[in-house]
Length: 285
Image 1 (tube, rainbow, N blue to C red):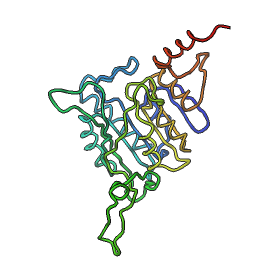
Image 2: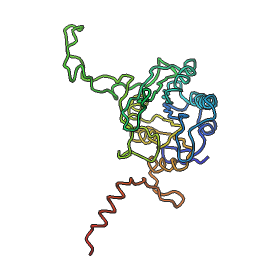
Image 3: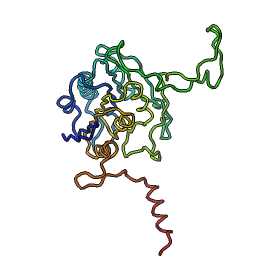
Image 4: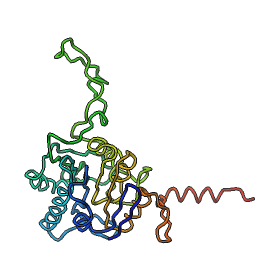
C-alpha cells in the first residue's frame, strides 16, 4: 500500500479492504460513494472483473460494505452501485443495516451494440442510504432541476388558494439522465467504466457540505475526488491499479511527475492525427 498526501486530498494505492480496515478512522466520513467492480468481466488494465462464483463476489462485496458503514459518521450518507443483476442482493443486505431512502436509476443512451433477442441494459442502479433518517445532509436547493410542468407547460395548480403556477424548479426524482462518458468528451480518461462529472456533482452537492470528507474506495479515474475538490470538500480515494492511481495523482493532486515519470493525460488518437497534420503543413523557416 502507498499513501499519497496532498493538502486535504489523500490517495491510497492498494487493496480497498486493507485500506478501509487499517487506514480510515471509524465514524469519520460524511459521504461515501461506491462504484465497485460489477463482476461482469471488464478488463481494468489487466485486472479482470470476474469472480469464480457469484457467491464469492457477494462475500467480497459484503466485506467492504460492512467496512464502509463502520467508517461512516452517524449523520453520513452512503451511495452504492453495482450491476442490475446484483443490486437486489445489496438492497436486501443493507435493509437491516442502514436506511435506504432512494433507489435511483441512472439512465443513458448507448451507441454500442445492443441485444437483439432480449431488452438490453440501458441503466445502472444506485442505492442512496443514510444512517439516521432524521439527521442527515440533503441540500435540495443545490441540486434543483427544471420542472417541465411549470417551466414549459405553464400549468396552474388549482389546489392552492389562490391558484398559482407550478414552480419552475424541482428536486430531481430517482431517474437520472446523464450521458455516459465517451471517448471524445473532454472529461474522458482511459478507463472502461468512468462515471460522469455531472452525476458526482449532484451526489456531492446534495449529500455533503463544504469541508466535509468524501470517500471513494474504488476510485478508478478519481472523478469523486476531483469533484469533491472542485466543490470545496475533502476527499480520500482508494485505487488498487497503479496506472489508475496515477490519474488521481494528476487529476486531483496536480502532480506532473512521479518517480521521474511524466504524468499527463493520454492524448486521443484524433488529437495525435490533427497534431501530425498541423506539423506536416507548417511552413519551414
